[in-house]
Length: 438
Image (cartoon, rainbow, N blue to C red; front, side, top):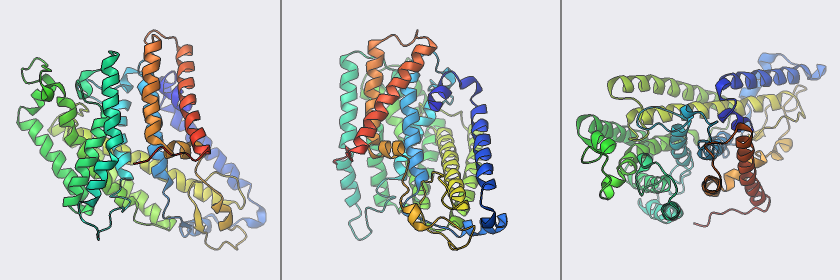
C-alpha cells in the first residue's frame, strides 16, 4: 500500500514520506535504546566499537535481494498504474529526453540482474574453459527469448496498444534482457572480470561519440528517411537494437559493483567502509552526470546514451547504499538489546563479547532469523512475478477503460492486482516451488 499510494494519490507530497518514515524509525530506535535494562547499560561509544567488531554472514548480503525485489515490485506497480490517470505523468517514461520512475526502472532491472549474474557469483571457475560460461548463458536465456516471442505474438494478435518509440515494432524488453546477458558473457569471457568497469566505460563513451559525431542519433529518432520510417527490420526496431549498447554498458558496470560487494566482508567495520565507498561513488557519478549533460545531451532512455547510463548507475548505487545502511542500522538495534524482537535480515554469525551484560544477541538467536517472507517469496520467482504482472496488466487493459477511472476505483484495482500477484508468490514460496528449470 505505501508504494501504491506513493505512485498515485500521495505523489504530490512524495518528498515528505521519506522524512516521515525516517522520523518514525528514529523514534522507535530511541524508545528501544531507552528501554535497555539498567544493569545492561554501557557507554554508547563502547557499544559502537563492539558493533563495528560484529561478524556478519559474508555469504548473504540482504541489501542486494531487497534492491532486486523492490525494483521488481515497483516496476510491476508502474506498468499497470501508468494506464490510470492518477499516475503522475512525470513518473512515466519520457518520449525522447527526460527522466521518470519508469525510465529508472528499466535501467535498475538491468543493474539488479547483473549483481547476481554467474560471473559475479563465480560459477565459472578459472580452471574451466573461458567460453564455458557463455555456453551456459546461451542455454539460460532461452526463457527470456521465449517470453519475448510470446509477448510479441500476443500483442500483435490482439492489437494491444504499444508505443513503438520505446523499443520498436517487434522488439521488447525481454529481448533486451536476453541479448545483454549474452553479449556481457561474451565480453567477460574475453576481458578479465575485474576490468568490467573499463569495458563498460569504453563502450558507453564510444557509443556516445557515435551519437554525437555521426548521423546515428537522427536515425534512431527519425528513421532512415527522417520521417519516422518503420520499413525494414533495422528501421522498425532501431530503438531496441541500438539501446543495447547503453544497457550493455550498465550491465558490465553493475557486474563490477557486484564483484566489489561480494568480496567476502565479514566484519561490520568492513561494511561501514563499503558504505563510504558507495557514497563516494554516488557523489562522483552525480558530478559526472552534470558534466555529461553539459557536454553532450540530456538523459535519454530511448537511445540509452552516456548520460542515461550515468544517471541509472548513480541512482541505483544510491538506493543500494540506503538498503545497506538500513540493514546495518537494524543489526545495530538488534545487538543493542538482548532478546529484542527487531527484524533483521543480516545474520550475526559471531557477536563480539557476547558474555557482557549489555551484550550482544547470541548466535543461536540469529540462526533463526530469515528474510521477510514476501521478499523471499518474490526473490525465489522474480521472472515469474514480472511475467504475471505483464499478463495481468494486459488483462486489466483489455477488460476495462483505465484512462477514465476514478481514484477509488483505481486504488481498488491496483491493490487487487498486487495482492493476487503477491499471493501467488507466497503460495509458491510456502510450498517451496521455484520456476527455474534452466
